Image (tube, rainbow, N blue to C red):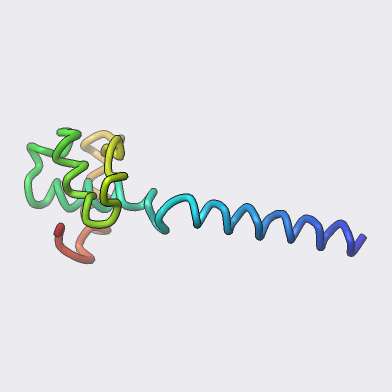
Length: 89
């Protein structure tokens, strides 16, 4: 019983380490944060994929592509509040 639990814990730890090594921490949150910031600063560019990529490049560098804002405009009421943490670089 304990051996199976230890094996599962080891597998989970390896998967977590792989996932964190494969992508920047909080990269999934970045699209939401960027959407809120862009809606506040320049809402007309929110669904402009090139502008969204440039807004995320400060964290992702060359990997900042195809990380668009995938939510409808009505969701910005929630994300705008989350985006007040720091300005877009």
